[in-house]
Image (cartoon, rainbow, N blue to C red; front, top):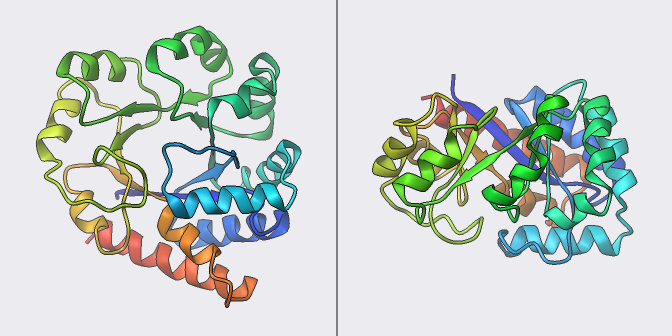
Length: 246
């Protein structure tokens, strides 16, 4: 069974909604939840996620809200934090990672923390049994891919194309996938531009997909009630899970 990872922006439109949505996604086919940490300059994310980040911050998001949301959902669904390094660094990594373990967080996804700089925190992650998810991009050489994936944990985030999330560009991912799987048995999940139209194609040869913008687009719909947003996200999750496993 191929896995579905869903990203949502924490605290948008409000904390209780994030909790309700996360639990609904868990009930409708999502295997792993990425709780996005709102940041003022999310450079690896597309316009939809950027907009949701800004709206959450404008509504008063604080890191303490992430902890509260996480404590409510982590016992029910495999939960990761996705954010930019400054957000975590400001919390003091030596204190934050043990706290994440205590809450039940299983990993962090930090797109702007280079592989080499992550070495400084390897023991901290390992001693708390928390994964620092590895990224591999099409621009990486085969030697670099080999280096990145050798110590990968939980899953490898395979960037589906060179760009930002949400664009959905089409390309042949098979040679790229083969070059990753040659050096690791860690599952490979495809991210960036995955939606219900592209999921079936992008998951070929991979072990799962990561979907963000497609969910956030629903959250940004101003004409939907909270109940309708949760219902639409749940339906999308069902479709995605079916598509990647059919």
